[in-house]
Image (cartoon, rainbow, N blue to C red):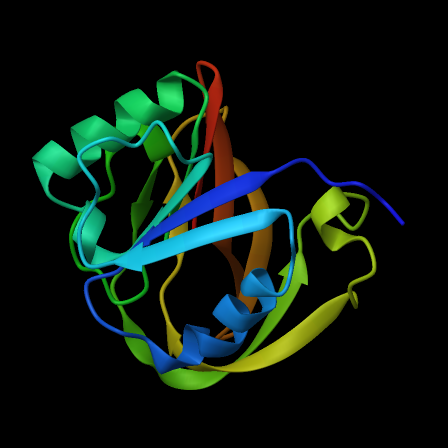
Length: 168
């Protein structure tokens, strides 16, 4: 059996998302993962390796706190679906508008990327469509969606000093 390093994740979510319940149950089933969920960020982020936010992390104060956390070596995953505001600059990308729900084909930009291991070449999901527009050379596109006969980024990642950011 593999021994995994400890991982501590904090979810700052503006509303309860029932679609995440199975994911939370999966994380709780892993002995090396500890997690917490709240509507706002804790005053001290040092106990966590990764922070996951949605709209709860979009105000300027939270973005500044999280950007500093990332620069010191933390990770920040921003769930931007349905967000009409711009992304914090640390992500190196911007959002398009939200389009109507449709069946989307999701593909990995690089089938050899570690994220793509043990995953199918593509998969389908149903939901509203919103893509990301990379704005820096260091922003990597990890996944794309086929929508209206074109392919556009829906998961990006980048490094900021000692930490990592990702947005979907």
